[in-house]
View 1: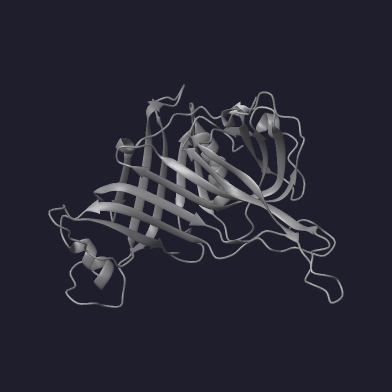
View 2 (view 1 turned 135 degrees about the vertical axis):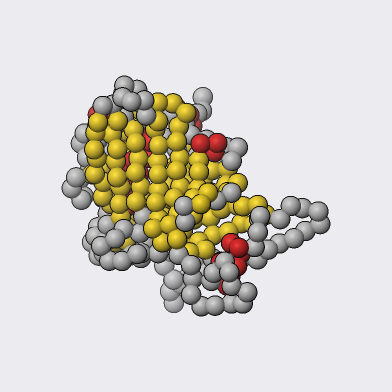
Length: 335
């Protein structure tokens, strides 16, 4: 018999010490449900160059250094997403009231948290443990008539195989969220978005291999990039002018960009159990300074004019975060 992918499981746990797999991952971690994805080896078979006097055939091959990378694709659920979001940005604080924990997650300029990850392939095919895993990229998206979905791009420094699968990890069963409960505002005005996407890219340098070791010596994040995109139905040329000319009132190109606050809010239909007063699960992402990228209006036949537009989050000032995410759930601690 073969192995069904649905029999697998992935457990995430924030790691306390670099280089040491978090021992309480089976009990204190969170099991994330995935649509697809997994980590794979980045490793070369080292083939020597031809040698004079050595004949025409390859005479040997050895294995080189290795790291692991891949994407986890998922439907957005607050409890497991909280762990990924903190790993992607770096810092979190929580305030808990009756049944509701409000987590505020913000970026840091220092090192980002590591994750320990247990990844079981199929039911009993293989169980890996990853140490020193980082969230290199985090992508969120939703259509007006679809689910909130995400993709986490993971890089891990170390892997072991043949481990014992956690029998009863804590599963994230918080509710799914859909586009009918997602709003986007720009400069406090609702943007008529048909879809949205948000991307966080930490640009980790993942080639710090050192003599005497198979593994990456360090994973260092470089410049952080936060971008967002939307599909809108054009109701006036004001947004196009702002993106392309610099301001919505301009009639010719200028050099200064308009920067306003962007807020993306995602809310569940369901209430958080035991919340008083009843409170929805939610995620609110606020970007204080956001500038749209120039784009073109694209008329075609009798199509209604719609545009795919992108933009860049900008750091307001040193000491002020480029973005803030506020997540409300019933989970009091980050796994």
